[in-house]
Image (cartoon, rainbow, N blue to C red; front, side, top):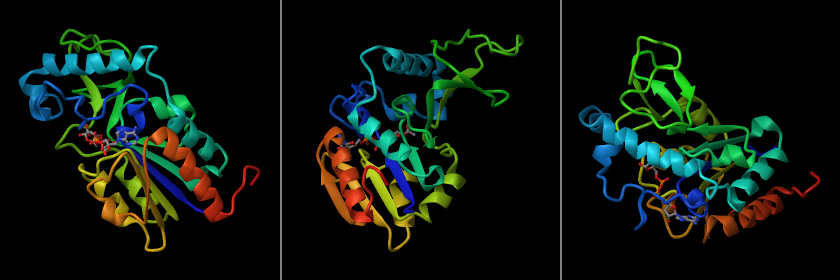
Length: 241
Ligand code: OAD
């Protein structure tokens, strides 16, 4: 059975109404990255940073943001395969892959719907706004000591060991809707075995496009199902396999 690693970025959620980071209507419009996505930014203005993620969280939880056909196609693809042969790594902090039904998902840049305690490191599910007065869910002595469970610039992405193990042993690596600008994710393609089929799906070429064998150019909602059909043909799988 071919082993598959899928890497997704902001482009896969764009058609669900979540702006990409580097688009003209970018997520950081009006904010410098250093202000809202670094530990230093949080230390210098925690209220602004909490509010920035509060707005993103509210939008994610609003009824107009739903998984799209690309999220669903990936979840259905995974469901048709043995569990240990498929890993979905996402740089996105939304929960749209899980909502679409994906199971083996590693959110390497954290999750918007989780909070982390600055003192104990404990992580909690979180759907509410977070403020400088928010009580700790388990410790009455801690007030305003929560931060979003998001990996900021300068911090270590999550689950790197599991990610690297899967990448160095995969037969197919597909990168969807990511600009290839942010490491370590942008370097994953270089870690794949020589015989691996490396595929990029994007509206246009990413910075690391040269490292891929094939490109599916266009919107993720169209190109992901097209690519999965191509994968089935290449590896000899049909709907009943
Ligand atoms: P970017 O915003 O850098 O790139 C999004 C990519 O998606 C671009 O290459 C677009 O061409 C492509 N794209 C946009 N709409 C698309 C669509 N409908 N279908 C297919 N592709 C589309 O987002 P990321 O590469 O995910 O990290 O950014 C990587 C990381 O940078 C983020 O996880 C975040 C940010 O800093 C952290 O917060 C740690």
